[in-house]
Amino acid sequence: MNASSNLLRSIRSATFLCISSASVPGLRGPVALVGYMHRDLVERKGWISEEDYREGMALAQLAPGPLAAQLGIYIGYVHYGIWGATLAGLAFVLPSFLMVLALGWVYTLLKEFPSCRQYSTASARP
Image 1 (cartoon, helix red, strand yellow):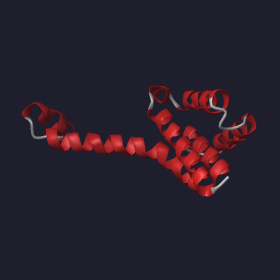
Image 2 (cartoon, rainbow, N blue to C red; image 1 turned 90 degrees about the vertical axis):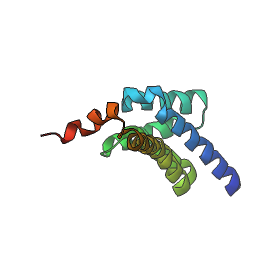
Image 3 (tube, rainbow, N blue to C red; image 1 turned 30 degrees about the horizontal axis):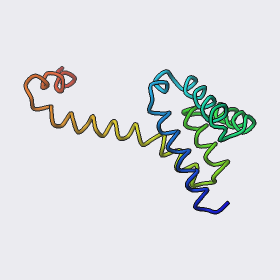
C-alpha cells in the first residue's frame, strides 16, 4: 500500500470518528460512544480487529482523560501512525471547538438586543 492510500484511509477513518463524536449517541456519554464505535468500526465496517479494539480500550481506560477520544487516537495511531493519531484527535476536538466558536459569535451578535441583555448580564450582578 502506498502512502496516499494510507492517508486516504486515515482521512476516511477520521471523518467517521468526527461524525460519531458529534452525533446524538455521543451525547449519552463516553461509554455509550465507545460502544457505538465498536459497533461501527469492528462489527459493521470491519476497519479494525476485535483484538486491536480491546487493546485500545484497555489502554484508554488506564489513562486519565476522555475515553472515546483516547480510543480513537489509539486506533488512528496503530493503523496509520502519527498522522492517523493526529487526524483522529482533530476529529474529536474540532467539532466541539467549532460549536463553541459559533456560539461565541452568536453571543457577540445578540448581546446588544434588549431581550438578550438580561441573559448576558445576569452573571455579572452582585
